[in-house]
Length: 313
Image 1: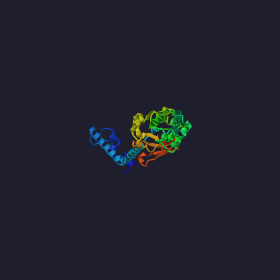
Image 2 (image 1 turned 180 degrees about the vertical axis):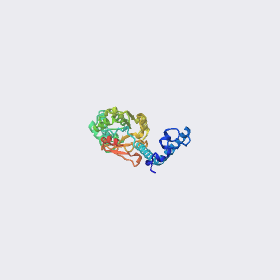
Image 3 (image 1 turned 90 degrees about the vertical axis):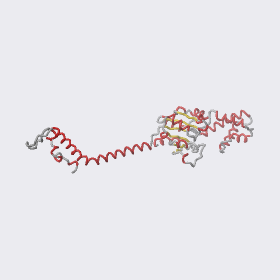
Image 4 (image 1 turned 45 degrees about the vertical axis):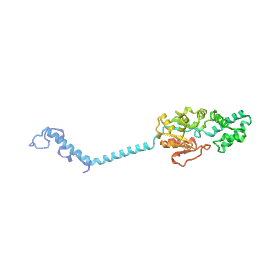
């Protein structure tokens, strides 16, 4: 019998109005029947309800069970999706060749060194010294730039002079400016995300760059890894761990944006942070790594592409 076709009459005499609504014998029984006591009526009523309920549940239970399984499965799927796609709340930036072209800083530093050396020696003009320095740098000499340029100019060179020029280079006030696209991106992201800045490099050079670019106001936390110790430079994870702690951000919800594949992405990848490489055309560090752990999960050619990418993560 179909559950929907059940009727009062099909449930027997105890489902009729007489027994369920009034004490005493049922109205349609013969007067020869003995009166029924109230406890007995209550027991009959309970038993009849139980039989009625069992007949209905046998038919309805499979449907209810199916609905329950569907809802449970949906909740589990939604939960898994939330775990796979956490909402990004924090964006941590590298500095050099990420927010501006580092080559501009190099050019500014060589100009300062050229002026200092010209006034110190009086044997060559600042212009000729700068040209010699830039020639060496452009040729890929990044470790003995000063030595080679002085030799080319015929200027006597020793370790003390080299240390002096390095000091001038690192402590000069940089003639650099934040590109318009970087400023637009920082303005846009600062209104939606918590921003941090984590940068390697010698001090005070890195701090002077930040001040010259006028970007301190965008970041809730700035970490100079040099202040943590030379062994805390990237690819060390120490700076990243301290940044996440300072910003109170789970690693999975914090993106790191940088440029140098040879060192920038090992640590954040190891912490399970999403990583994005900005491949500026004028970037200095163009080396790559064959290790998958060192490669960024996403790449963009312009920093202006960053906001849209973050929305998709």
